[in-house]
Length: 117
Image (cartoon, rainbow, N blue to C red):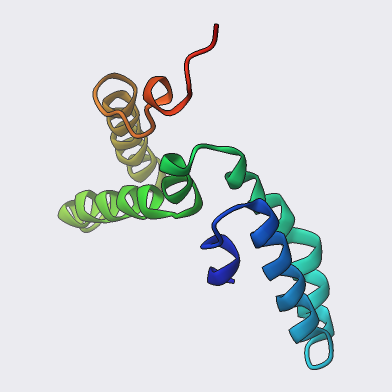
């Protein structure tokens, strides 16, 4: 699977996808069918500039958010009820969202695309 998404471009990824499906078709037909049906949706990442592809195809940002939520909820240890946990997590996610909207530039659209005339 990693080889598919590490391909240099969309045609190479599609070739690799066909190879993977053919490799599993004999031994694991359900897996091959699932790969053939679902993985092409993930190949849309190749429509973006190369500089953005790695950030879009990984779950690093999501993993970082989950790690931060775990770190901040571990401090409280025990929540009196579910709604108190939801309030804390919602506040944390709102804070993270605000930081991303105002401060961080994860994908710079301006510098990635050639100017249009």
